[in-house]
Image 1 (tube, rainbow, N blue to C red):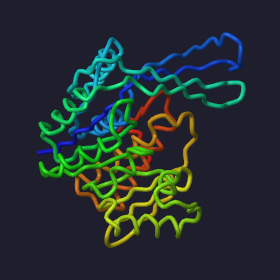
Image 2: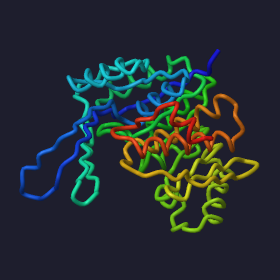
Image 3: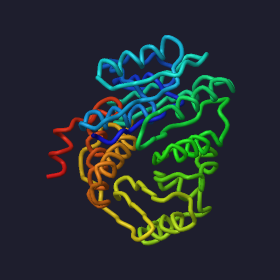
Length: 304
């Protein structure tokens, strides 16, 4: 039986990607080539795991017509999902590619304010999830306490599931040493945790290993952009370079990386191979259009 991966998205979004000839302040900017995708960290992870043939369920907080639109898009992509109803409407995130400059502009709302009842209902759904891995990815919307992911990690551990986390800010620091199996920080997030700049590869590997030894998480997957990624474990640290591709967007690349890593580990691939799969998924995402657009054939081609 395939390993069951449940993803948690507390702050999902309708992701709109478009192009414009030129983005200028004070002017009505006409866009074209619009594309809508279901977005939010955990949702992106579930979409990529599903695209790769894995067994994923997207658990999401869903409200309003925008929430229903997210659900419809997941259904259209054949991604299994389960919604926890909230009072507020899900946010709409907008990414515009400026053709004149080549720059990408991203507008990301904070999301709806959740009530204490909303939070309790989400944690109740987490407790009911039948999963081998629980992957929480993305920001916490207003009204959700910083230790929310820490509570989710405790629930997952009590049910015998491995908990993976990709978030930032107070939600990240409040979750350290709370039973997280895999933590995926960016370099900026790692530096925020250790309290100083860590700019060379040996120091990055050392700091990631120290976090594991300190009990922050059992594994640290540190993403380094063009410099690849590091996977730190109790017994060793692995680094792999990035897979060189032409970049069109960065939306969903980190989530795609996490999806590949979780799937690789869930399939009991050697850590080095799981990290390679993760980098291939991230590379496939950045050269696509829209959010976390990853195809299995493309990933396999990048791995050859």
